[in-house]
Image (cartoon, rainbow, N blue to C red; front, top):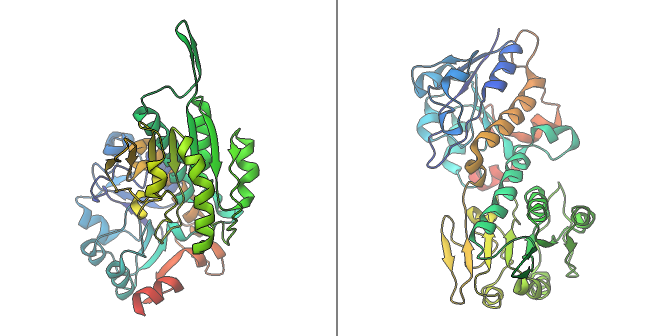
Length: 376
């Protein structure tokens, strides 16, 4: 029997993205499923209701929650929304389990099968499903634009009748998806770019984008595509080497973060004090505490020596149209292997993608780290 896939108008403060765009609704319907949306679901991402030719419309969010066999979402559901879900429903989205223990318990107790996009294994086969990477790419791009907009100087070198203007110096900290996109964007804008990451494997990627890799003598190659946490001694060594590069940078883009954990402090207050007045730090990791000691999420802090420290939140949401397109495709690519020819959902629990991304199922918390955090 064909399943019903539902999507809501996101209710989290400031969230502009939508989990399903018209193109992906058409794909789900073409795969044999029924799709129902809350009116206005895509309006804030510039997808008016009229663009959804094949989707159906629910009377309210409650009606969609009560009939959706699979609910796709951007932000985590509230406790009230979880309580309105259809018994046995499946939820797929960014669930932020590390910070939402009450919601995880509610999903467990209602025997909801939930998949956290941030838990999707970082393997080659799952690249097209990787919502973290698609949204991080947008964040890296936008962070450089924010830096350029806040600098009181040009990014590129300019030769004018009044003389030559030297290019800005940009330093990218963290060379994951966001960092690499930030490097590419800063280079396109004409800055002289340096980059650093604790994972030595990124050195060649940084160089291939035309940036200089900052050598600090510290390597923190980890597992699963993420860097391991540094020891206190390694952090001190890294800080000493980076301080010299931070001091001469006009723009610093900080991107170092690991999902579910507090971001490491890499830019100390003393490092900021050595920067030139008018320099800018854009801290993508602000929502996880920030890579800069002075960062405040959602605010711009000006240091005593005139450095702007910008802590943007939901950067991907500032590019809601493309962010929604990319995220919706991620969700389709994740769910499609489990949809059979009749449009029914058949999850293969031997598939490492589903087994790795599951948060709750059949009344239990399946993700071990979350289970320990929630249940002790």
